[in-house]
Image (cartoon, rainbow, N blue to C red; front, side):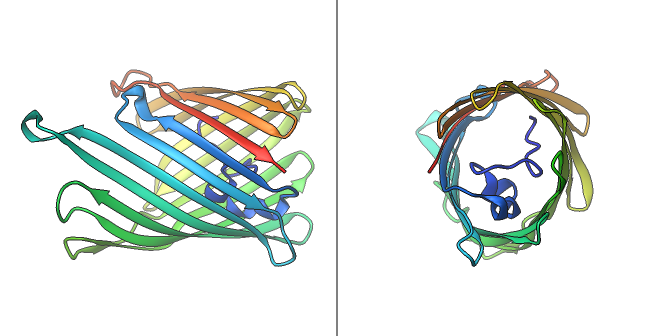
Length: 257
């Protein structure tokens, strides 16, 4: 759905996309996903998470995200590696019947094969998730509300402040439409419109979306399959040709228990 998940995040991906949603979780879940960015075989992303429903002190979530690449070394000799590891503990708590709040504390570890080019740091995300009626949701996520990164060179920096405002609405029992606007460093960065259609309840879903980033619009589509408490999802974001990059493929699986 173009990545418009702040207002529709459920279990797998919730600690990352919107930790406040976990306040509505009623089952434990574990999930994993893999992405090959732009189909180049260079930059890969692995995501693993766990969600535990509220035991009286708030729902909890954990995730680990790895993004890395290996490129040809200087003069074509050897390879140079780069990796970003993110570890996160998230919490979500319902406040009344229709609203939940959440937060995610993140630790970053950046490593490279080039001396003095790594770093480490942390950040804090804040989130709201509301269900004003049975047909709609509203979400607001502040990424890196607080952050700090210390580089091996001795320099320090802040991660970019990101805002996500989203909403979803069930047009039909089988069709949900989602909209999301994103800002980075107080400037508009993307608009996404997406949807999911339930072909067969609790079994087969199809998804699609359009994301407008500055001067480029990227279409995307996806498929979801559910077998009892196991769910398998596939998604593809198609490059429209303006950047010359390929399609990004993502594959995920989650288990509820």
